[in-house]
Every structure is written in C-alpha cells, then in structure tokens.
Amino acid sequence: MSHNHSFEFDPKLAARRKFLRHTALALSGVAIGVPALKAAAECKITEQEILGPMYNYGAPVFQLKLAEDGEPGQRLLLRGAVLSSDCKTPLANTLIEIWQADDKGMYDKAQPGNFLENMKPHLRGMILTDAKGRYEIETIVPGAYPIPPGVPGLEKYGNLTRARHIHIKVEPFLHTSLTTQLYFKGDEHLAGDPWGGHKPALALDMKQDGKFMKADFDFVLGTGLKG
Ligand SMILES: [Fe+2]
Image 1 (cartoon, rainbow, N blue to C red):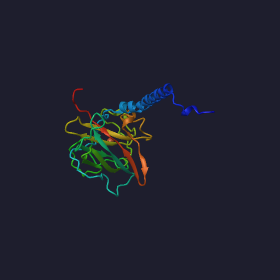
Image 2 (image 1 turned 90 degrees about the vertical axis):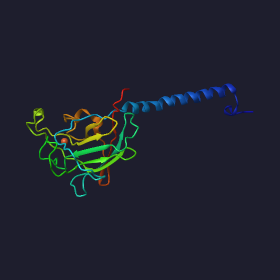
Image 3 (image 1 turned 180 degrees about the vertical axis):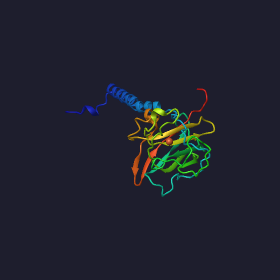
Image 4 (image 1 turned 30 degrees about the horizontal axis):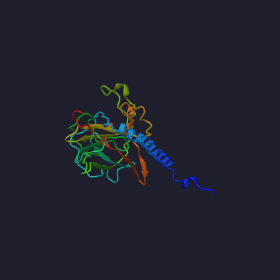
C-alpha cells in the first residue's frame, strides 16, 4: 500500500516545519525591515535656503489659489503637510508663506532687497495648515530667470540662469522656522544652480493629471529641543 508522506504525522517533521516557518517569518521580517530602515534614514529636517532679495513683508492671506485662473503658465497643485522632526506629528495652524516668479521668470517686486516695498502682491501669499497639518496650494510652475550681473556677493553667478524655484517660509509657533526653496526634478538648470544644485531632496517630483502638474512635499521642522 502506498501512502503519501505529506499526510503522515511525524512530530519531528512538524516541529521542523514550524521552525522553518518561523525562520521564514524572521527572514521576511529582515526583508521588510530594510525599507523601514531606509524610510527612517530618510526622515530629515527639511534643508534651509536663503530668503533671497525677492521676499517682501506682509504677503496677503489666500485660500488654495495663489495663482488666479487666468494666470499664464503650467498649473501646479502643490500639496503636503508640515511635520515635526519625527516626520509624523502634524503641525496644525502653521503659517506657510510663498513667493515665486511668474511664467516668464518675473517677480512682482521692483526693488529687490527692500523687504518693505509697497507694491501689488502677485504670486505671493500666506496660508495656514489645517488641523492635520496639511496644506494645498494651486499655483503655476515658475519661469527660470537669470541672476542679474553685479549683485554684491554674487558677481561670479552673474547671468547664470537659476533653476525654477518656489520660495517658502514655514513659521510654526513651537518649532524652528524654515526658509527654503522648492525645485523641480528634471529642470535643465538644476544641476548648475548654486543653491538647489546640491539639494536634491528639495526637488519636486511632478506628475501630470489633466491640466495640472501635481507634486507632494512635506516640510519637516526641528523642535529646537535638546535630544
Ligand atoms: Fe527667486
């Protein structure tokens, strides 16, 4: 009479199978531990950038639309959250200030470096994160522009075309504030940009969705606390 070994109950074999199953679980635990460790390694405070001469104090408050519907340029929906240094805890009611060039690379300011210029704000505004620390900004992809020749301290970059960028300030009340710039992956001027060229983590990964390009970006702020 033939019998199938797989139906035979053998306590030693059963114990061995259990051991193998546990080993496999342990090994798969190691395997899934790799991306988890990678994700942990990627939790970093968002890098700082200069304020630049095109900042202006007192930008208007807006909701969702920084760029009005008729604004020329590629529509961009920028979304994400402001998070604490653990990359998890949301920072509600945090002020985000944004300013950028238009599609042709022009800012609304006529007096670079004068932060108290009295002009009509354009593509410049302030918004608060919601209760979950989230924000959503509808704007356009800014145009690239050259650094003017002869700017004190930037003489060697005169006429260099900067990578497209959006200026951002994030102003929380119990964390350290952030001044930065967001760039765009694939931008031909990014590698040579004196600021963004060495900060790939600040480059947005845009995805086309109908008339929109969509990009997600989470800002991670330091607590300012020891440890
Ligand atoms: Fe700029």
